[in-house]
Image 1 (cartoon, rainbow over the protein chains, first blue to last red):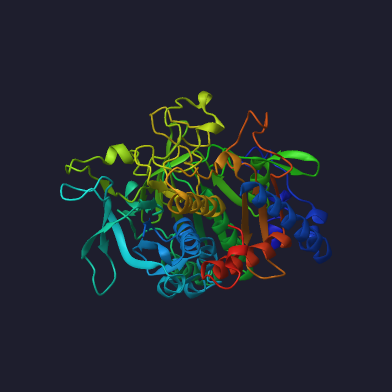
Image 2: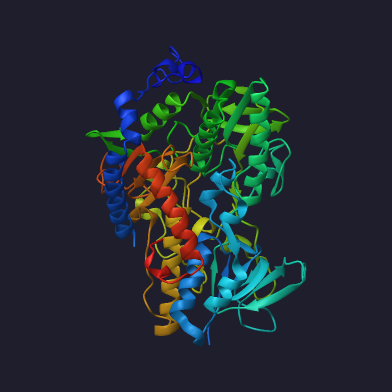
Length: 59
Length: 489
């Protein structure tokens, strides 16, 4: 019920000509990828490498 | 034997003191003056504020750690600086007032050869009517600025959850409590952690959630926003933030200067000059920051506070304070060595240094009220500054007073930021962001001001895992456990 009221993927939360009318919201695939363990394990490596590069450039 | 006195034991001061003690060895003395008996990993206060961690998990006692490092620890606050000594001595000293239970109120003049001001900010709750008195949090809102504040916030949140379970709708208002606040990121993280907890408790449909902030656009974060690489686009953080707020059904008020807080209600002025008010049942508003109010005196006892400190109480360093209007701002305005221009043996790092100007474009309402974020100097940049200042001072002590100073400008420094939303290893998510450089350099990176190869953001479990790792890694490092120097700031 709560999920439905607050919009399963966010589109239902957009208020016509309100604050958030011009933004984008993620679809089901984008949301699924956020918790897909295989994809996130890869992203974990990629983000860590990128962060280490930024740390390296900052020292 | 030279003596280095470090004022403050937060991220920046602790980093500076521990590295200096390691590099100087027992031939020289490092003294830390901090009013707190515990070290606090402040980013994890967010999890304390939603009841997912205890205060003990984000703090530890400083005394045994400093004893292990050979650092002299004084639980006290700095009251004044005498950088030229006084009429009876040429030796510079800092006057400190003890805060521990056994000697509270006693004072001491602590001589130094070098001093680092890393006191962090004064939490200036008193700047907004009703938000608090002086540095004390008021009764109408909560805070996550300290571990104790966060514990109190979690108890208040629990009460709201109980009310919602009993069928009573609740309004949540999270953001900044003044037009000149920084640390929007902490409030941003807190609102999404609350949202996550409400979902977990099955009461999200009973909550109306709203963000209130002094940012002129959502996603400014005090750094003028950023463009991040995503799906082949350089996407503005405005889109990123608005998307997240919409997805989680959180409404927002931006460009707001909260000028009064009452029980269950805030009054605010917007950038267009209109005045309005917003009701709440639970509110966490970040206070504005100021310098801790250290005075400075010349040899003859004259007040030279204005020579050393900027009007906001932060210590002047090698920044360009005369840049003037926004159109004239350059990346080179930002300090590199954090050395005071008047006294060569005085440095400042972390929040305690006076920035040359904001990073975000300054704005005023038609009534003349300045409304805009002040620049963040916390976390990773704060630690890097502390280390660089320690390197400079150690070189001058060990190699001679002419040794070149080390440099680390926020305009040539990146930052990694992970804003969690939940704590579970498989159901929490986080917005992981890196930004390079923190201060945009529009000459090096025309258009966005930043290197979009290294400025990115994404939401997912991966960022969440990194947040967990960072918590344990930095607590481990701060305790000076084996290998601590290998962990970057």
